Length: 251
Image 1 (cartoon, one colour):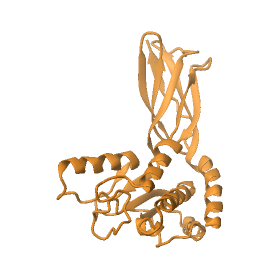
Image 2 (cartoon, one colour; image 1 turned 90 degrees about the horizontal axis):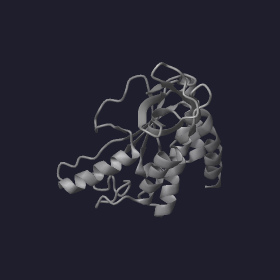
Image 3 (tube, rainbow, N blue to C red; image 1 turned 135 degrees about the vertical axis):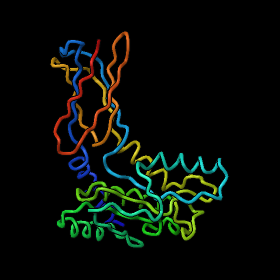
């Protein structure tokens, strides 16, 4: 576990390098003149990185529990892949072994990366010990694995299989209990994706009407506040594209 913690500490530094960059938008008036000193904000709405899950078959479950499960899925994941759906072409699948050792798994990702294809990491509760470890330890392991994968530049997706303990073969390795209550592992994962790896910024535009901030790659809602009205636009913050300028017309 000491080596695992060392790996996680190292990956925390890599996340800022590989998953964040500078974004920029510009506020213009009705005749395309820059608006300086205008209050603005930006809030991330989704990640470019794929945090995916195979949703459970809930055909035999009452509607209220289906909705509870759907709500939890939406909180933590930005991509749902139905069971049996084909994997995207042009990716290398990487199964996380049972009781994964993070240091060894990091070396496996490094070994596969030079092939040039994006890596899709497929993980189950048994990979981490969700079904057997004390709940806090299992939650720590889930967070550690996701942190490792999110930090690695070759990884483009993590897909979780076995979300709910009521699914056949999950055997206690899900992120939700049989009554659909979230386990600590789900809480930790949700906090990482929705809070720790989530960007928001606010301030005022510069003399050129621009506002720049450093954030995680993905889609944002940006807003402009004046005494009369708040207007909003979308900004797509793309890796490797440099600062993105979005004109928000302010009449």
